[in-house]
Length: 167
Length: 279
Figure 1 (spheres, rainbow over the protein chains, first blue to last red):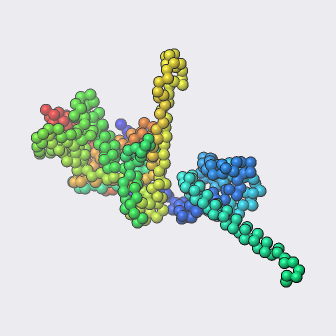
Figure 2: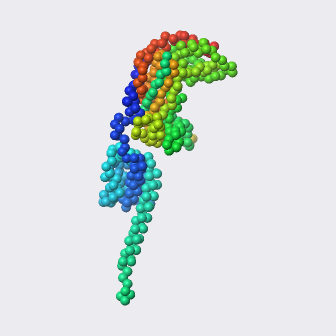
Figure 3: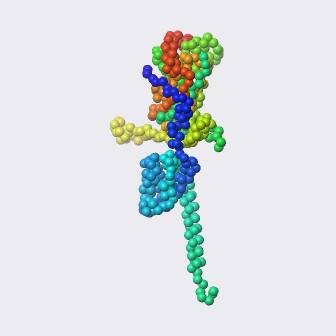
């Protein structure tokens, strides 16, 4: 029987094999919590660009399937991944390009390892991210409603002109 | 004689499904508790028992069975002794030191692995370490490795289907059109440690000769040649490990060659010893 000897590594090569990479710079530079927050921010922004042709009651189901589908199409290309998500939720290009939270993520200067870690997090923690994103989205909606009411209240006060004679 | 420390890093080349049981209908990977700064974490591992059998005993013994012409000539008890360590079945156990000494001389691999004859326990000299997953939770074992992923990043799942021949339409006509018996379709799934995961493990051959070291190294070579599998689902491509050694103060090729020559030279006496144990 013909077999081969097992490869033998010197101490440094053994240590590097344990560490799992030949180039230490290949590891993500973003800390795990930052990757998690960026994932939540991304998903929380998607309702802003959700297609009008879709039934709004399917918002979160559609976003969930968008993430799953996008990761099946791209695990290395962040732009391709985001494009696939936006296409799946029928985002209109005008809304997408004007959406500041999305811009923040798409234009972020991440390393390749950071991008892959972010996409991987979205794929593996999909449902948890949806829960957190929905909470963030609802919070943002409440805040917008509060600000709008405050603005309307100020406009009402400002537009109240007492009749002559009352001054 | 000296004590040899053989340290290994094995990389998963296919999903590793070393299981501990099921949860519902999903097979669960074996995990062990590990103390971390954040409390106890449950981390996948490879048991020393599994490594001992799959990487050392089984490949080495199967080679001996072939070389000694024992295929088809072993009783079940003898086969279990060689392959699985045997069982203490007689009520009056005793110690036959001559038998032990002869085993050490004639079966270097069994001196390492030990075993149990019907009336005697034969201690082995080989310590087999468990396989530690290289991950954040096991950081204490890997000083100097700064970027370690958490164990959860090394886990995934699998799902396979057993089909139903009914769809082919080539069974007996009555079975195709009239039989509403239970479907053969079965979906089964489980967890696995993903490809690329690395395990640190090793062996301590205590007070061993170069021949015994050769027996261990030959077993490891045979194991790797046969796919280096550990755990289950090997029939579906799971369980393949690529093993690399930390270089030590031995000549691997010379030790293996010396062991092979020695084992072949002991053939007749070794077989006679085995038969004598079951007289």
